[in-house]
Amino acid sequence: MQQLLTIIAGLMTAFGLLINLVSTVPALFPLRETVHAPLATPSPLWPMIVAPGDGSVIVNGLTLNLSMAQARAIALNFPIEGERILDETGRVLTRFEYRQAYYYFDGDVLCRIRLPRTPEGISTESTFVEATNTYGSPVHAYKSGNGRYYAAFTAASIYNTAWIVEFDYSSGAITSLWQANNLNDYLDDAAKAKQAKAIEQALHLHR
Image (cartoon, rainbow, N blue to C red; front, side, top):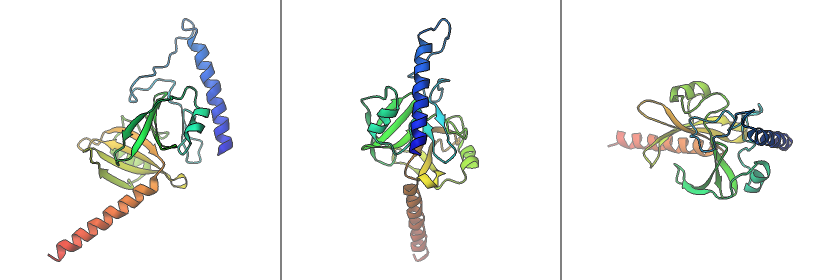
């Protein structure tokens, strides 16, 4: 896996240099990177999403569980300053925007990547039903304290990764999606929710 990341990083570096060269000759090659475009309407160039076939996903050369130092060594011009945010589970994370994707660090570990689409084609133009048809039933679905609805799907059990989608409860439209490195946490949450529901039903029967 480390050797694959090294190869991908080299390819990304070469690609970045090529794009920089092309951008200096706009009359001949009218390509440009829309750095601040919304994730729902990505540039044709970024983000570059690669699925090697082993269950991992590489976004602009970066994968989950990298350290901050590793991310900066791989990614060209990775931001220095990030934004402190709360995710829907209440964790305090640091978010960085890089080439039309968002990278979330829990301490020094890259734990989430928000991207406009998955390698299988699920995007912010897809629906909850389409995600279910692609990835199977969610391992956990929940309403967060922020009032929004989320579902976690298995991405790759071998890497403990999940696809997290935020969706509109009425229409089923997906509004945001992430890859996360904590599939087991969602499995545990689902088991706890099921147990709590069983206890509630048992108490109701004995009233």
